Length: 53
Image 1 (cartoon, rainbow, N blue to C red):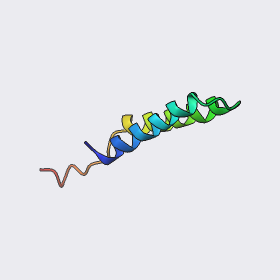
Image 2: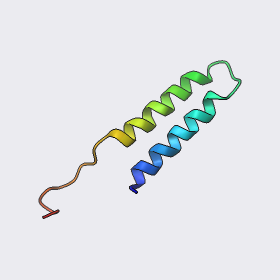
Image 3: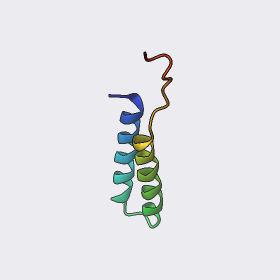
Image 4: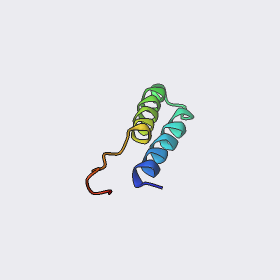
């Protein structure tokens, strides 16, 4: 697994934990964390095609 994938999963997990928080505006930060985490996972990694021959 790539380090970015693991980082994305950790951020999504943090967002899910925030969702369970009883605080008033925790859903906003939860949505931000889940969005950022899924963006890290879905984003294609930039690889140099010249070096992978």
